[in-house]
Length: 484
Image 1 (spheres, one colour):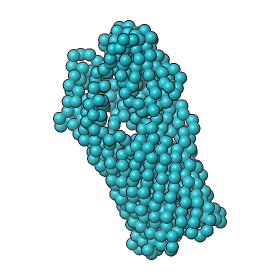
Image 2 (cartoon, helix red, strand yellow):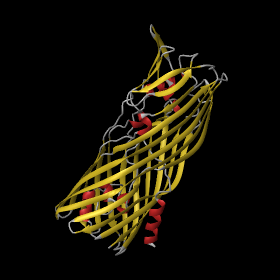
Image 3 (tube, one colour):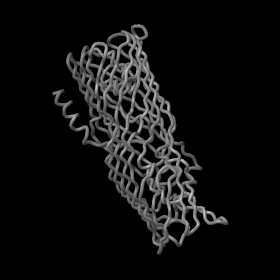
Image 4 (spheres, helix red, strand yellow):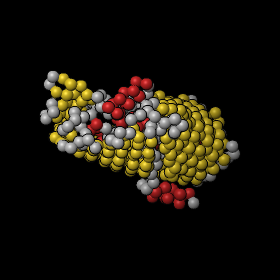
C-alpha cells in the first residue's frame, strides 16, 4: 500500500497545481517530520526532507535506505475588506490537492547520497472579477478583470552528505529549478461619463537555474544537535516576452513611440497622437521583468534536543535576505518631444524585503508505534509595508497619469505602457500551527499532518486605496516512508 502511494505521488507530481504566494519567503513544508514540527528541522534533518532543510543532517540517518513521499490538500482564502465599496469585500479562494515532495537517500559508508523532486510553486488560476462603483475611484462605474495563469515550478537534483566523524558532518544539495509561467488577462475600466479603457496583456516567462544548498551539522554532547544551511538561487536561462494592447474611446490616430529598457534591447509600440498620455498602443518585446525571478539568500540555523528516545524538541531561525532589480525603463517620442519617466524605480515583482522567521517543533512517541508532532512558526511578509502615501500615489497615478510641460517638450510620469502589472500589493505577517500523527513500523511509516496559517494586514487591490486583508490557509499532508 505504501509503495503504491509513493509511486502514485511520483507520477502525479507533474500534473497538479497549487496557488502560489509571492509575498512570503516560506512557501511550503516537505517530509513527514519537518511538516509536523512546523518546519523546525535544520538542526535534525535526518530523513530525506533534509535534502531541502540541511543536507548535512543526512549523515545521521539511522537507516541504510529511506524513501519519503508526500502530498497535501490546501484550502486558501484571502479577504480584502471593503475593496469594492462599503460592506463589499473582495475574496480570492482556492482549494487544491497536490504532491509536494519525493526523495530517496542511500548509505555508502560515511557517504549518504540522495535525490529529490520538490513541487515548489505551481498555479492554475482562472478567475473573472467585477467591481461596480468602487468607493475609492468615484469616476469609475465598472472595473472588470478576466485573469488566467498557468505556472509550473519545481526543484530537482542530487544531494550528498559526508561524516567527518561521528559527531560532525557536511552536506551539499544541488537543486536545479524550472519556472515556467503564462499569464493572460483582460481589463475593462468603464467610467461614469461613458468613457472606457480596455487592456489585453499576455506575459510569458521561462526561467531555469540552480539552487545550491550547503549545510553543516554537529552533535553537541549526547542530547543536543546544531545545524546550519545556506542557499541562493541562480537563474541561468531567462526567456520572456510581454505583449499588450491598450485602447480607449478617445483616440483616432497614432504615431511611433520608442519604448526602451536600459537592460534589454529596444521595444516597439504605437501610441495615440492627440494626447500626451499614450492612449491606444500595441506593446510587444523582451522585458527584464517578464523573464526574471527574485534570487535572495536564505540562511537556516537550528537546534535539536533529545532528552530521551521518545521525545524531541527543535528550534529554527530562518533569515531571508532582500533582493531588488532596478527599473531602468524610459519612453522617447520624437514626434511629440515626449520623455516618459517611471516613478517606480524598482520592479516590484522582483523586489523583496529581508525577513527573519522562527519555528518550534515537538515530537513524542505516545507508544512504540504511535507518534504525535506539534509545531509553531512565523511567516513574515517580504513585501514593502503599505501606508497612506502608497495609497494616495497609486490612486493618483492610476486614474490621472499626471504630466508636466517643459520648454523642450513633455515629461510623462508612470506611463501606462508598463501598467500591465495586476498583482495585488499586500503586507500580511502570518503565524502558523501544525499537528501531526504518525504510525511507525519497522520498515515503513505513515503520517497525516494538519497546518493552519493565518494573519491580518493591509493590501492595495487593483491600484485603489489601502484596505484590511485577512489571510487563512489550511493544509492536510499525507506522507509515507519506506525504510531498510
